[in-house]
Image (cartoon, rainbow, N blue to C red):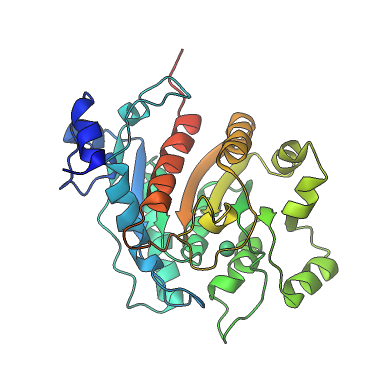
Length: 307
Ligand SMILES: [Mn+2]
């Protein structure tokens, strides 16, 4: 018996390690019909450039999530009672980037039309293009909050417009985007930001943040009424989340990120989110657990228990 199993045996709800559901939730809290939130898995990593393995990200998050406490001690609520359904992973890995985006789009649109709140687990960052396209169709006044170490504003990378290094450029063609936490830039990213007059990309880098005490307000105020949040886990300090394909020194901490997400969810209508680029490290579950808990906390902010 591992430490975590032992710990959870002592808790009120035993760990259901065999379950394929987020948190191992029982039918009562995870049937599609009763669930407000739906987790869908987008395992795909055809275009990653450095460390491969993001295709294993969704399953690692699901596995880690079963060991979380179900009571949220920041929010003093049992968020799982909103119902969290987990779908089978989409079969994406053999597809071209274009076909993958279409499949993700169709899945996200189906959920939004059914009035479900979509939570997508990646996978490399390009999966977000399909989900944002679907969100934009349902919520015209949409903007994207992108938490990321990278600007990802290249028009083409390694011959593809749907490379992970182009994801923000593609998202900005769908709706305005606000980037925060960026700290790794290509010359092409810089040239695009300087020359772009469309106002569709607002970038708030870590260097901006270091000099701007009110940066969370600046980020929030830059967003439109409806917001889709895409979280590339490499936005975090790699000391906290080492398991990403392209770790960058520096980055966000846990509490400041929660405080930003709290502010955004309070002021805006969040219509969906994703957590991408988890590239699991064997025998180190730190990042997997981090991602699982981040998702749970963010769902708690979006669905506060009625007081
Ligand atoms: Mn990134």
